[in-house]
Length: 465
Image (tube, rainbow, N blue to C red; front, side):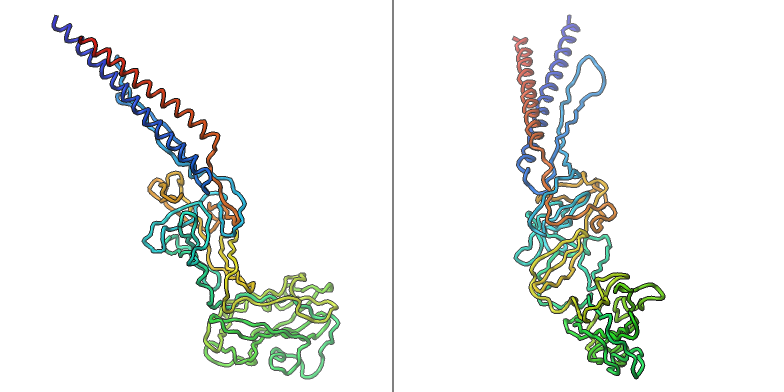
């Protein structure tokens, strides 16, 4: 009789183990549904958070013994919250030029502070505003970083975050900016008298004063220290639809060669302007205007420098296109400067900030001048959904996300940039309410497992009475 009782005792123990596994499975169900309900709570409370990415609860089974046997041991369930980082939110118009949104993949590069040791954070929350010190920070207090542009508006992408600087424009006030462009929209009277006197025209005749020009205008060019220099454009009509043009410094002693020698009459450039029968510029190669007249005025390339040793940058001459009428023209009206000017000088107060589609951050000053200061990079990852969530609606890189690359907006997988725009949360409120009902029902069902198993275990205990 003993073996029979022993077999029944072993069978009862196995039954109890199965019941206990069911009990633990019910507990795991409560835990999993609680975690899932927490994702719903997080999503709903962040429905109005800029660029918030909804979190989805995904469930996976737990298996204690995969072998097939007469007695089954329940494993239960576990919930894994997955942030849908790569999901695009709706882009909504905003009234601030520093509100930025990314249309496509990528993140803004920010830091939690100004020190190089502060944590790098990647975010799509582009609600940036200047703080009391002029730094651009978003609603979470993260500092926006970018490449600082040099005097020529260029930057070097080394791929290293440490090469970036915090975006700050207020430190420009009171500093000097060299001239980078000279724009001239002027008209040369088509029926002006043609010069045919003595001496015959030769390059430099207008700069030296040997021949008085038919028309001339002066422009102020600023060096790297903010010093102003007068540069004159002079024109002499020598044939129908044909003019001689000279660009020279006034006085001539303002410029010199890089070796310190004087430049005769301060002449910087000379050549022939030709016009079509309709008064537009003729820039036909070989037969039209002298091509060099329209090239950038590059002191370094020409071996020229300012006499005060201040630096200069290449100056883009905007004088008009072939067959164009937006630059220099030749119509019947009297010769005159219609519009024109230069940039640069000592910078005044900033009136506004502009961020272009190319990610270039420009400061617009009270006098209407503009200076490009920063280039914003867009960071991309092979697996953006693998990023680690951190406080401030931001993310940190890890092994699962892959190696970060950064490029200007719209290049090599980086999304397009839009100013006066914010990205909305990706949360679907109707879907979250549906999930709330699902998880609540599943939670109740799991609790029912526990109460039922408790009743069954009580019956097993009663067998001993």
